[in-house]
Length: 404
Ligand SMILES: O=P(O)(O)O[C@H]1O[C@H](CO)[C@@H](O)[C@H]1O
Ligand SMILES: [Mn+2]
Ligand SMILES: [Mn+2]
Image 1 (cartoon, rainbow, N blue to C red):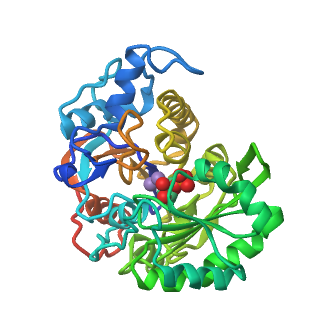
Image 2 (spheres, rainbow, N blue to C red):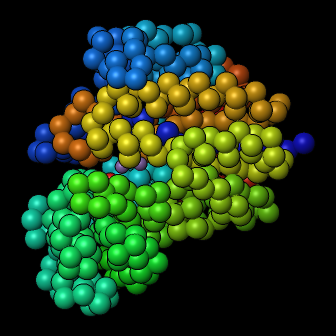
């Protein structure tokens, strides 16, 4: 029976120690020393993360695989309260792509580092050039746009939501990522209209090497606006065939869970499983533990660590999400069949104790279940894609080397 592979990205769960962290910034401060997991564990141990949970961080399943050992290898930090002797495959991975964003991280994990420089809108105010502003307004059928600045999405929705309802103009904003985001009210502006607008302007932005146009729909009334789960990312295509294409090209089935479809521009994906939150995505993962075909790849992204807690600098929330995820593994790991491999990793960091609200450049954990104890040491992101391909017996391309 051909073994199966499950590649599971815990979005933003970095473990510090990136060799090039000094070249990346949050509010002008270099990312040197950022360590998402270690800083959360320290806050928990010191009683600074007791909202909705309490005490030292408890992650028994990930720790048993080798989480604490991976953190120490990556950054020299210890995780207070954790420190099990590894029983799984464990190591730490560094990224070579020049962006600390989600597509760069995922593509490189899938074997394809990003060869180009992303275009960033660096100006904090008037971030977009006038010809782009005109182009977007024209595509929206409005006299102008609102925003045109850097902002956290929830803050700009609160600040400009009322004006948006009054004028009908879309709220356009960016961040330290290579993104053009449009927030609009699902009912007054219209969800379909927002999605059509993003799709229509995406080719021009992709041509400029802006990684993603993102629709950020919201509902509600002034003072009580909330974003809905109907976010859609229109991402530039990966520069070369990725792990998903390799596996599908070999006649195998691929399952994508959550944002993986958008991140890979829907390339190489046989079945897409989406949900309104990470709990839904975990249900898909557990079900696929039972149902995924022999020889198949299941590639999952759990986004809430990043979107709900990392960007919001919510340490206790992040700790709760980690503990929930680890607890759910008690339902997933027993589904693995002999010969199957489940690999847990991350795409970048998002240290909730750090300056700013953006991602942090970090190494990421590589934790594997199904093939016993194996220390793989310091590897590259692309080695993960190559290893999954090797496990499935599918030919790989690109710079990655299998560590299996
Ligand atoms: O603050 P929100 O709108 O969630 O934006 C976040 O999400 C975007 C893409 O993941 C990034 O630009 C990041 O800043
Ligand atoms: Mn991410
Ligand atoms: Mn993010």
